[in-house]
Length: 226
Image 1: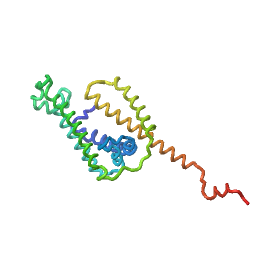
Image 2: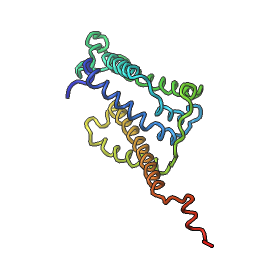
Image 3: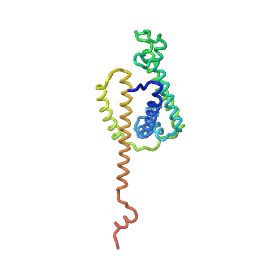
Image 4: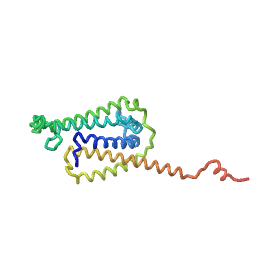
């Protein structure tokens, strides 16, 4: 498979996949957020408004490219050069030297930045929710039908199915690989819940459309004649 962690991949892999992810997120945001707990100041249901937000195409494009470029750049300092990603480590051999616990510095940077980035993301989500920034920027999320039992049943079934495949995959229990795959499991499960809600809405709409019209003429037909 062609290398996806190289600069040419920004255009042929990162940008197209980022666009697909943007479309999918907008498609499922309202249904997913409506079924998430508020979690206090995090205000998770507010993220449903992202389904209705539209930026200019070039804003979406350069945002994807900036995110992908910074990811590839930092990978260069936090991966083993033997694997083809650690170009920064190859240029600065000191990162190959053992640090605390006998691990090379590039590995310690990888783990530290992963934990630090995760903590920063949680803090950012808390700040956004605590100050109501999504509602201030974009308004309240659109009214969305809720059916928790249906939503979480679909999500749970997909989660169980996808989790059952993880032990069969290469590097199944490598922490960095497992972490990414668990994120995919969560995303696919929530999207399955959103799909079930959209299907329910379509079924309800079709049922309403097939109901007999009980307007004035129908009522007149049922009235006793004198």
